[in-house]
Length: 242
Image (cartoon, rainbow, N blue to C red; front, side, top):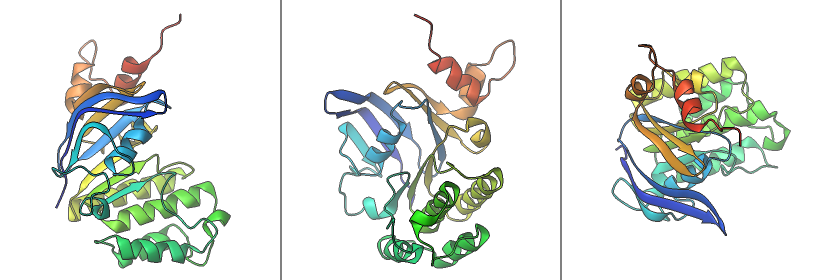
């Protein structure tokens, strides 16, 4: 199963600070969608709402159901981010054992292959890893979960260029062999340019563009030249001098 996502006037506030304002968009099932925006734009907040970790204002459905504490949606959804559930001061094996119990489609062989490829040992403590190794470990958890909705929120942080490419390659292989809905948030827009099919661009908590990536490139091109997604992002979120 893959999940389609529907959002109508989705909003969220942290106390008096409104992080998201009336987001309305559709994410087709079985696609790789880029969630783009500048720092503090609301991307991580939206990722947490989609994964059911926080309750959205407005209407948000994943597979036709509200993801908030839903017993069917949440076990089939994975959010890989700085808030990923990790036993920080315990061996990696302990975290992997927990994930294997709660993720319905967990693939132990894939997890083992990724750990080997990225030079990680289950005997190590998460807190003793470098930033890049921590990112690689959480990426391995996310990929091996084979969740119907998989959200990677800045998973590349600290990874060197080789590991990032290995992550992208594995993600595409997994997407082809085990279809799912993937949402990929990254500041490295150029690196994911040819991976993502659809795009959501958020600025200051508001949706400023959404839809097919190729159509957005064409729409924002100039002088007969197609824009890159980096061009689109800059053009829609660039600040003017006061």
